[in-house]
Image (cartoon, rainbow, N blue to C red):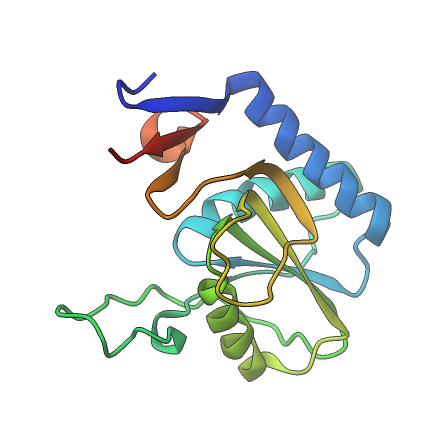
Length: 182
């Protein structure tokens, strides 16, 4: 464990949480027909990749539309930074018109990232509905009235604290850490 961080989830519980999220989606959306999955670049894609692979396995389908959405130019702080933001590639080779969209991000905090993603999605059509999945919901300090439909873990963290998600593919381990600033 990191010296300053408290481990909230690791290894087996992390895997079980992702498994539970997939089963909740299938319970609500059945076979994922007329639906698509969209991960928010960059960190939401790490969760979306795992969810996508597991949904394909559980449904025995390989044709679920899956996209990676960049929101860089839709952020409300885009022009307020001292250094330019570096965009990620949009990988959306389908339209979302009349589809159910599962929007995926790793951590829900203020809601501003989700607001930017909703604006960016408008370029891909008018969906039937959009639902949000997050691995971590930081319940406090929401700036916008946005809530997740599917949540891995809820963390009550004030502004002076933060949550960090480590992924096997990037960090060599799966875990969620909680840090309190002092």
